[in-house]
Image (spheres, helix red, strand yellow):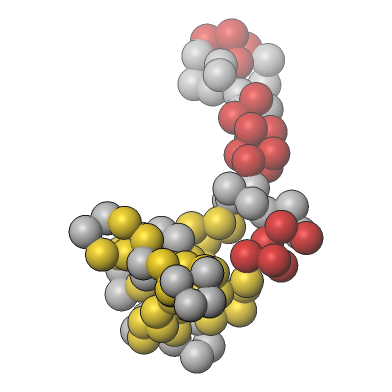
Length: 97
């Protein structure tokens, strides 16, 4: 799967996507491509974004490795939590069987 920030916004996934590169979570990712095994992210030095003053934008860098895109579905997770049977294994639940 390939996912860009623009696609994530269009699909309502902003804040629900995490990207791993070689097993480590990475931040500030602009493009992640599992098939190509690369990510493009905003470049930082000493924790600060690197600005290209000629183009007036933030520089990016491309990193290669094993890429995994994780998309969380908060609505599904909440539904699973609220529909779980809290009485499982109790006498009240066994009596109803």
